[in-house]
Length: 465
Ligand code: ATP
Ligand code: MG
View 1 (cartoon, rainbow, N blue to C red):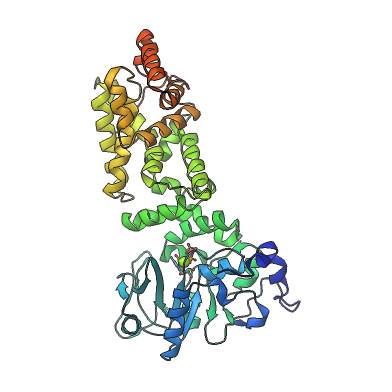
View 2: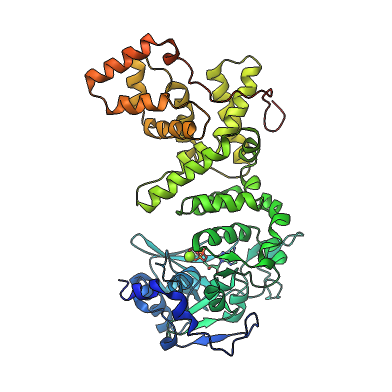
């Protein structure tokens, strides 16, 4: 499908340079620039059939239709577009009338999803300036400047200026295959720079998720943040606390499950954003010498699996992210004389309920996550039938993987993991021998050896336990 793609992969920079004439002074905004088909490398071969169908049907019905956002940005960078976003002057109702396989979604931001098999094309009507009085007041802003709703229709120029980054405001026209560049996005692609359109602090107040998007694109595209775009982030990080937990969950998946988790995590920590998403995990990283490493290792493994096109589950990642807080709370409960098993149960419960106030983790992920934690207490029990029951547990593999990461991060001495590795590879005879060995070794059936003893009396991360 992507014929001729490798040419752009090799030197997208060189190719783009030829688009920028010497007359273009760096930094000077020239307003709209239209780049004709013969002067840019983006061709219809880069786009899916579904995306082209949507564009042509809108066009043939007399509407304007453009591909916009990530798919044009990524095509210019020689990357395979992940999905396709269409912008049009047709209203959501008009779009819906044109496509049987479509539905209008969203309240805060109404768009149309047009479905072709497993592929979904997002069709968005041009937005105008939220401040404009369009009669029915369908844009709403909170006192802090947060955009509560954004359904004021506008023209393409207005639409471009309310997008987030210059590199995301590039429009590919299906009428003449030109690219419309409203905010010097091509220049910023060439300079590998993420620059917010407009005043950065205002744009972050309108939608604090843009701070997460800045970090996500910086990690994914290996772009730097323009200084003015970067400067207000730390100070505005707290605004993320206003974002509904369900929206943050979607963003978390895009941040951590897209193949660049380690870099993304480091940037989130650097800008103080991580603490707004996972406050207890952030505190645990200050208290426990292994907690940050454990998360890095979990993300490294997730990134590696994604690169190898192997399946990944958010349950495992959340289990690693929140294991530090679970351990702090469990230690505090045990210090109050609660036995280890109920202490882990109670600690898990507390950590999940606190985390849900920030990010809604659907049950289909939080239940397996808790199984993975419970199994951490069963893995050290290496006697008799229990071992086979543990081995047969549906979350055994994930729990074993977490155990290995705990050892690699320095929380535990690396002997239990080795034992389970050997046990899984062993035949029946050898398994019996391994079980016998544990029986003879009194340490083998007990709690795994902690690597470092913490001297401080453990306390609950928010001080209430
Ligand atoms: P990708 O799909 O590769 O993650 P993308 O840039 O296409 O990246 P989407 O979330 O699909 O990101 O959004 C499509 C486009 O919509 C963006 O390119 C941008 O122009 C605009 N957009 C999305 N979210 C926002 C936002 N919070 N504020 C302003 N514009 C946004
Ligand atoms: Mg997209």
